[in-house]
Each structure stands twice: as structure tokens, then as C-alpha cells.
Length: 446
Length: 149
Figure 1 (cartoon, rainbow over the protein chains, first blue to last red):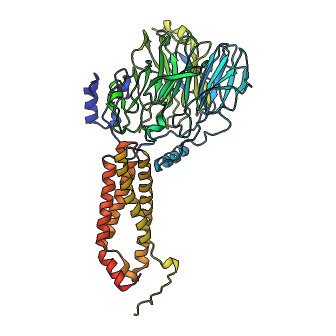
Figure 2: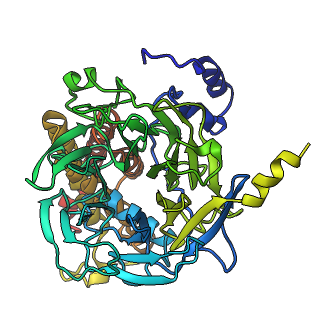
Figure 3: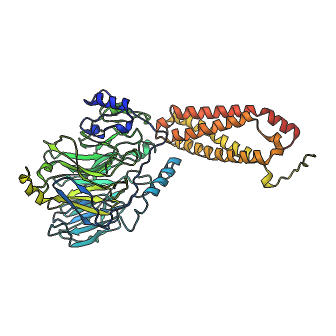
């Protein structure tokens, strides 16, 4: 409230003169988002997109200079993609643990509405990892093998040397891997328990290895929207854990991050970055989801406050001591876009404008009147900091009727530098490459 | 025309159902005020869950009582003496409306599902309920004296 964004007067005028629907979401993209007044609902809007899937030949739209093809189809809820050193692509297929008990009538009603809208999504075995080998790098994998099965709602994976780590929703597990393996049959060894059931509200455990290969960072989401399940349920949650997998020593690296995903290291500064899903039910334009560098020991507000010292009145008792040191995140992505994946462009094969910046997979909103997200955006970086507004890279996950053909989640660069996108309701992995012909033709255009 | 002979053993479709349904719903309304107050004193979220369920059941039983009451109003025209006074029926409907609104307020997450509007509506519903009870004292006395029910 003390921090007045430069565009606030204009936004205030807009809010006064027109309805909240006229709010420009662009005002919430960047380092200094406009934060309107809190609006608590009598009826929380549930505006979910009906899942229709991709018809044969349909594919998302891409920004100029790019092209997109399906890399693999017929998957079971692919949530994240990971590229092994030899170029093999791992697709983590995962279903939520569905443990959340009905604690109050709202849980019951919301689950009925969600099931009604997202029908047809449950089509078979999931909770496994599929390996795709595209040795030629032409976007058409010659080999498809089930790499690892019997996982428990996995999300993040990471390879350190010959140790392959899987972040299940309730435990970090290590498996032996050697280059070229097409399958892991070892039962694995549990390194560390992670906060799972009995509620397990935000269940995805994002995972990344430090650049020196010594430590692992695990994103652990909160167990509620805004501690309505009690503060006891939030122990060691809404945080990024730092784990030494050899000694099993772990600590909370940063806290107050409601649902951190897409953990990765910025290539220039080697700082840890994350995208975070912020809290719901304070209005269609609160609270903006964000991406941020993560400081050791940093507290980022949840649940007590957002964007620094903006108090959340739903939390009692408050913690002024924590709020006083709450860090303002680096870059807002706008409200309810649900970012779940992020990766930096560290290769040279996509157009030069993307070099060094971050791609973000936005799963899409379900609780604001107008859809937001449902696309992959690009945020340019300079000297390790995001600059400029986000640009659309891959869109068209919603059709003209607002039905979901797909929803992007985790993203990664393959060994050729192409962008891979896990689409968990389209059950597809998309591959975005440069449209070479166009880049050659560009100088000829007047 | 002679009044129908009073019978001690009413068959099940002849029994009055509005009163017990209304009593159950009313208990939940008063209960929700108590659990809301406990939440305000303790800030322990389990008490909001209790309030949510009590209000949910109160609204469900309240709607059922309203429907049954309307049916009985028509079906028991001859037992007019059992009928609550109009003012009580109006107050009961006010309670039901407040309880439905309070369900929405309580569907919010955390402290602001109760403070200030949630507990205020719980208190208002309980208060109007007491007014409604008080407005029926004449009917009760009559029923007791006549021994109809």
C-alpha cells in the first residue's frame, strides 16, 4: 500500500469508471503490478474451461518465426519434461493424489463442479515416466519406452551423475541410471520424505539440481488456499527445500512461496528462480502470480501478506514480524494464470530475441470471469533481471468457444534447443522450433 | 358438521412434520452461532468447519421445512388451530434467507468468513429465531389447553 505503482492513477480511473472486467491484465505484467482493492466474493466464481482435447491435425498457434509440431501424443497427463544428457526426453505423466478430504460443504461442491467440467480426462494408467528418443533431432522420436512406473504423483525429476531423482508427491526417491538406459527396473531408494497426505492440496513437487550437482532444490506447495485447513497443515510447506542427497540433510531455503514450481537457474547469475501460484478469492485481479529469484532465507509473504506488506485479512493470527521482512517478488505474470513451468533459453536454435530469457508455461485460470493464461509466454532478461513485458509464444490452447484443447504445464529445451511443452489435458508434448525459411526470407522483406 | 374424532394414534402421513424439521434446523442455527463465537475466541479453523456444516444442514432442513410446511398448510386446513401465526412464518422465512446468505459468507476462506459478517449473520438468525418462537406463545397455549396435538 505504501508502494505506489507508476500506472496506479490510470488504473484507479479505469476501476472507478468501468467494471472490474475492464481491468487491463497487462497492468499486472512486470516488476511493478497494479494491485486493486481486495474484493471478497459471496459466490466464488468457478469458470473452468471444458476439456475437449485436440482434434486430428489441430495444434497451438505460435509467435512469428516459430513452428510447432506434436512431439508425442496419447500420453497420460504429461506434467513435466526433462532432457537427459544424451538427448533422451523424459515425460513425467502424473495424476494428483486426490487425497483432500471433504472438510466442509465448499470442498464437496467445488469438487463436483470440477469433475463435471474436466470429465474425460481420466483415460488410463499414469504416474509413470515415458522415454522418447529422437536421436536425429527431427522432432519425430524413433523410440518410445515406459522408463519408470509405479510412482506416486511425480512431478520433478533431476539427474546428478548416475543418480536419477524423482520427486514424488510424498518422497524424494533415487534410482541408478547410466547413459543410454531405456528403462529403470530398480525399485529405488527413498532419500527423504516430503509433505504429502492426508490433505496434500498443492501436490506438485518441483525439482532441480544445483549447477555444481551437490544439492537439490524441491518446491513444496501450501496445503490450502489461505490456511483454511489450519496453520498446522502448513508445516514445512509453501517453501523451497534445499536437500543434500548424499547426507539427507535438508533445510528450508526460502518460505512464504504459496505454490512454487518450475525451479531453474538463471544462466548468467546462476540464481535460483521459480514461478509461484498466488492466493485466490480476493478478486479476479488479485493476487498476481509471479516469477522471482529466490534468496537464501527469504520470506515471500504467504500466507500473511502479498507483494511485500499487503496484508491478507483472512489470516488470523497475523505475523507482523514476518510481514516486515516479506520480499517483493521480481516480476508479476498477472492474476490466476497458474504458472507451473519455467525454463531459460540457453541454446542458439530459437530466434535470437529469445536468447537468455525465460519461457513460462501458464496452465490457465479457473476462478476469474475471463480466462487468463492458457499459453506459454516469454519474459526477456538482461543481466539476470527480467526486462520488458511478457510476450506470447504459444497460444491457442483454448478454442474460440473457450473450451480447453490443451493446457501447458512443464517446459524444457531439448538437445537441439527446441522448446518442449507438456500439455496435461491435451495429453501431448509439443515441440517448438524456429521456422527456418522465414528467418532467411526476413532480409528480403521491404 | 361434526369435527373429526381426535385419535391418539395418528398414521404417519397424518403426523405434523413441519415442527420437528423446523426444530432441527433451528438447533443448527443456534449451534452455528456457538461455533462461530468459539472460532472468534480461538482462531482455530476447525470451528469454522463446524459452522459451515451446521449452516449447510440448517439451510437444507430449512428449505425442507418450508416445503413440508406449505404442504401441511393446505392438507391440514381443518387443523387450523395447529397453524403458527403468520408473523412467525414470516420470521422463519427471514431466518432461512439469512442462513442461506450466511452459507455464502462462510464459504470464504479463513478469518473473514466469520469476522465480521459471518458471526453477525449467525447472531441475526438466532435473534430472529427467538422472535419467531416468542410470537408463537399464543398457539402453544391453545394447543396445550385444547390438547389437540
